[in-house]
Length: 298
Image (tube, rainbow, N blue to C red; front, side):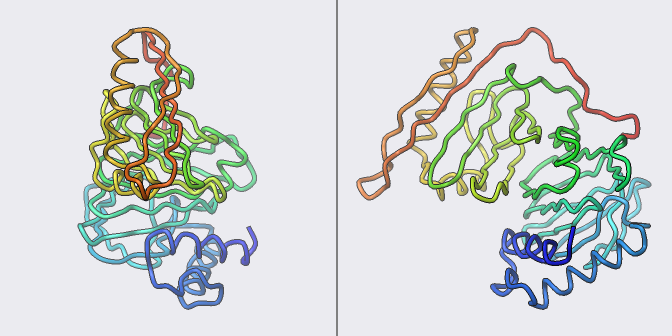
């Protein structure tokens, strides 16, 4: 990836987490610092940063390595497989991986890098498995997603079983240039990325950037995470619409049969834009199949 492309990506990443207003401007101190950090890691063959390097951090953030020891985490710190990263109520942390993907942990989140492997010359070992035990995160795809779709896996609560697309329950809403997915059962593959049960994904159609909230929706279709609700409200999807969707999905699941239907939503108020048409999908399965856990995962 060329420096100008990395600079543009860094601008998007820094803006995602609400850093300084100048962060998205190529040539700004934040972009220049990020470029230097990534280039230094690349020149060192990513030694000590096998799963990435920190390109943005603020507030309270802690890192514990696979041996249980607390490790420093500052701008430029290396991230390694097995690391557990925890953000406080004011914490954000962003890291870029060797394949130039980027992850941002939002406040009050816990993320565990279960496995990461990337070889520029050989895609055979491509692996990225991240557990998000609570809170939300944002993700910008990199080279691994382009050349090895499906090798990047996000999981909640360390779950190892997955259900293939078509054997899942989910709700889809498109509004104001964004698409929201509620993964109520199984897992859902969107654009080559697999999102586990409980995820709420809000995706920008133009850029492909996604906000992902783990453990944010229950098996009945009720959104339980306040940050996810705020992101949906920003799309024009308020509490009334969520209640209608929950009722529709619960009825579909209770039927025990495959259901795919459209649900009309009313505007939240007279001043609200026209409400979208949502999709409610439910497909029952007998067994969970597939195992996302690579041999290197501990």
